[in-house]
Image (cartoon, rainbow, N blue to C red; front, side, top):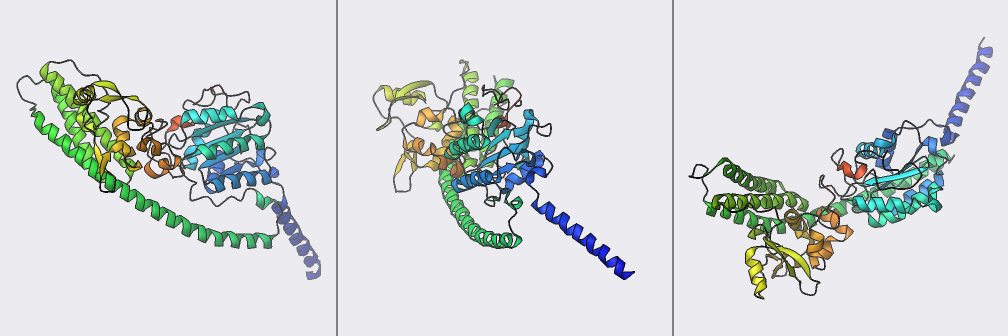
Length: 461
């Protein structure tokens, strides 16, 4: 009996081993199609994901080369190659992929024969993403997924702000389906692990250095912002408004309440600030409050309610601007800047404006626009991202804010875009679902034409 059972057991074991070997060596194209969640999970570990059902679009070798290009550049650029199936609905695909991946960056998706892209606005402005997508939809490159995606990545890594997420392993692509010997894989795994330890140590040092620089920048900003908050509080005291005073009405009381709220909000936000970018909403609150005070003063005196204008460029503590005047910074080009009444009169007499000066670390005080990049978030809260480029063009602060490195170090959003209205996440940071969805399709990609294969028409973003 045992003699007859042994050959049967041996045959069964051989069948199991053969089946396991076949599963290990089967090409990736034989695997079932994945889901958006599969793609998102993979993109947390590597910059490129190719769905098993879309392997004919991009080979394992081309995928690996694309991953290497992105990781060597160290930029938060994500690429997914997916089949055009109902599992990947065009209208919500990019938003869902970005949400499920949870990392700030630039996302490009090749869906069937079409391409579309989105980005967190602080990593790449919406207009830049549109232009980049349009540039690679040229028929000469669109026919080949490899050529099109490489063209996209070449441009994206040059323009994207921030750095690659720490979770990336460096990319393994689909190499585990290439039939490499198990021993080779084990050796490769050991090398990767050893390299990972070194990379982790370097990453820790880099993060520690960056944290020290951010603390130093925030310490500088605290001095300036505390001066602003103190000046605003003194303005509130000089106003000497009492809600029950004769002539006060509900509109005046509401203005006064908003002014007080702005004061308390600014103090609370500054107390909680841990990063230079946290200063932006503080100065924005102070700007809101000063406008409320200007409106209250107009109501009390019977004057016309002032239009909402930015604060005086030379010193936001002067309050809302009353005019735009032509001004030329030393060595720069002339530009229109908003000014208060006092500075308008001084410039008309040929005198220098009463400029806000800050400590630049060399024992001297200079106008804030001739200081370092740490003052970018401070100015950004007062003037907003859309106004700063024209005001600061050609100045020391303006030239620093225009560099890609500024976004990752000081929070971005102050210069050159103004698109970002979401959280202060830098490229490559984990933000989960806290992101500005306007950079990922808005109302959906059905009206954008990006996945239609017929070119980009500017919609969908």
